Length: 63
Image (cartoon, rainbow, N blue to C red; front, top):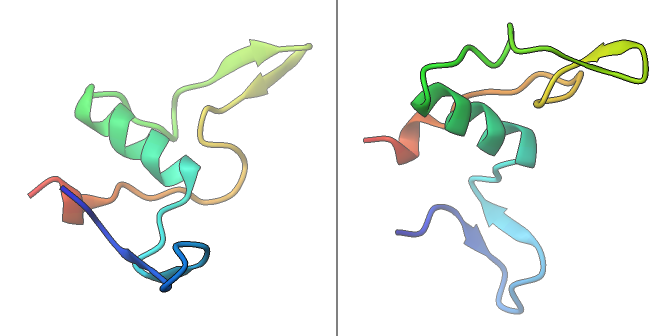
């Protein structure tokens, strides 16, 4: 399966970009874990696997 498209040199995303945080959110969703609630302690702070920017579940690849 492929999702999205790149340019002719496969260097830049041309269509449907997916960030790593979106991939993590999608994998966690498939495991039944809410990515917004999953926190873990690291160097005295609570961290999220998906980071601080907004992440989304890529439902287009789940169909």
